[in-house]
Image 1 (cartoon, helix red, strand yellow):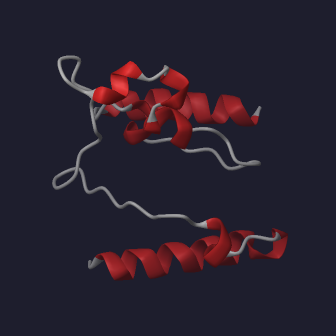
Image 2: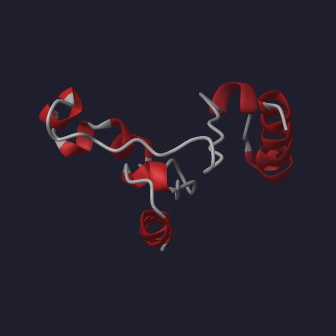
Length: 100
């Protein structure tokens, strides 16, 4: 499926689900990333030369991206900066905990 189809379907689904509660996809979606595990992979930091590791952890891109926005939380392996299934499970546990 081309990315444009994913994007259209995601925007449509989110608008139908959240539109009655003030969600506006043009205003509220900054970007959409579609990872197909066979073709894309969560970024993992390299302790040898990654400049992001010199930032406080709370300022690293993955940490910023997983911050809740209202009652929306992100749960995927990208939010853990670790591309493995158990990282996605850990992210799901964290995201649900943010909502409770």
